[in-house]
Amino acid sequence: MSFAEKFVRSAQRVLPTPFTIAILLTIITVILALIFTESKTEQYHLTEILCYWEGGFFDFLKFAMQMMLILVLGHVLALTKPANFLIQSLVKHCTNTPKAAMIVTFVSVIIAFFNWGLALILGAIFARKVGEFACKNKIAINYPLIGASGYSGLMVWHGGLSGSAPLKVAEEGHKFIEEIGLIPFSNTIFSSMNLTCLITLAIILPISMYWLGKRVENKEINIDLNFSEDKEHHGPMLTDNKLNPELEGAEHLDHSKLLAYSLGLIMIFIGFYKVLFHPIFSGDGFDWSFSFINPNFIIFMLFGSAILLHGSFFQFNNAVSRGIGGSVGIMVQFPLYAGIMGIMLNSGLVDVFSNVFVNISNPTTFPIFTFFSAGLVNIFVPSGGGQWLVQGPILIEASQHLNVPMSKSIMALCYGDQITNMLQPFWALPLLGITGLKAKEILPFTTFLLLIGIVIFCSILLIF
Image (tube, rainbow, N blue to C red; front, side):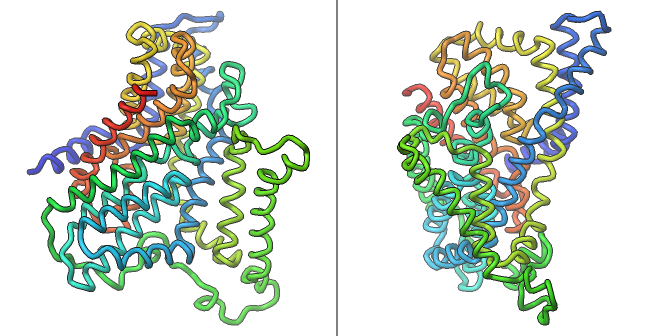
């Protein structure tokens, strides 16, 4: 049995579902609060802690909805004709494993900077199409390596425009506004540190996968060329021509291209107007801090783009129906993580943990400790937004004690969260379903990406 097979089997035995993990983490947090904190009221300590849990349970319903929409709308965009055209135009250049691995990795990394949901699905479909191209033309390739390349964007996403933590701290009225204020994208996503990191990853990762593709074993693969990703995994992709060929009455509105194009263009115009024209007309000039980028802005632009590119409300709603399943985990887990945060903040447990961080760290090593601790937490909390709810309060408290720039600490958490996606197969499930691969087949190659990423991220955090 290979190391990859042993790792996957061990993970399956040790790790329950993410929802069950969230429940277990809640129980552990309650126990830790009982042990390390004291009652602040006349209630029984356990009752007090449970009240903190209930009080925090509903604090992040808006945040949960925002993250769900970012994922679903990214998925919807991946199912548009322009996305399919991009894939088809690139697939013909994937004539061997090294070239295919390099191209798929580069595309996945770049798109993940803009939206992780789009990168996740587009990368999976791209890998599948490369496999179909190789099968049709009887080209020997290493299909698992191509699958891992399609997943590579998930080690970049949290440092991009859809990153949960940077988006949240850039939003007016966020939970920690009194402690850290607003932190615009110019200090996080568009900081020199993060842009250097992105450029480095966009260069090194594709080259590394090309190098690895030269050294792996290739073989001809057999893929069902009649396979329909939509039919098998997301339900049939209905089109205006295939369903209801004879429309009646108000049904014409659902299929109207004019209405869809009009609404999509209006939404995109409003977004660009607020960014480019409104500041100029008001005399404020362009906002170089990029403070206009927040979850609502991202969602609004994704919404308009998705409607425009699908060309009808019918097609758009159909795509949403197929993409929404991937957001269920966010919907049911975020309240649990918000409850955990409620316990940590109100019981004083966050001070206990932050003091541990302060005692073992200094301003130089703290970002590195944050990176590795975030990577560990991500294995158990496979959600960037959920991880921010759990680890954010500790991070803020410790950063302030050590006088470490909050923006750097947040990005260290983002880097750690995204790096162990290469070990945590939760978000790989859509890719595995679309490509027909198994987790144990892509794990050796995603582990290779993980090791390269650790070197890059740690180097960046130490240099800046």
